Length: 167
Image (cartoon, rainbow, N blue to C red; front, side):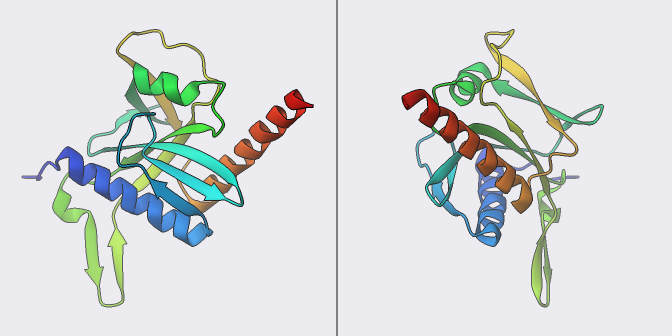
């Protein structure tokens, strides 16, 4: 029988996954010990920032072309706010049903048996519900170092848009 992970275990493996990618990409990462603004981690690259809400599941909802995750509307509204100075993103980490299979120890490595997906929520429309809203995480939007670069490209466009408004 598979051992169901607790909320804190899912949170910690999500943080570890993002830390590894950020380190590989040369990005700095800030962990927030209070999730007041709907943000678990902020990535930085040469002054640009990207905010990320981390979620983890052992039983993803598979939809055509990817996954769907029900995010609480309060967090959704914080991440989609058009006045954010750093774009808001949702990252969903998918782990095996059995927590004992999450990590494989090999002589020269440790392998995490998980994969992640991401969605930009910056500027998204109002939720249709008061409680949760379904976020689509397309299969082609794997959470990788390259994806983090794409997130920073969006942050750069957002910053340039703000700069034009100030002029």
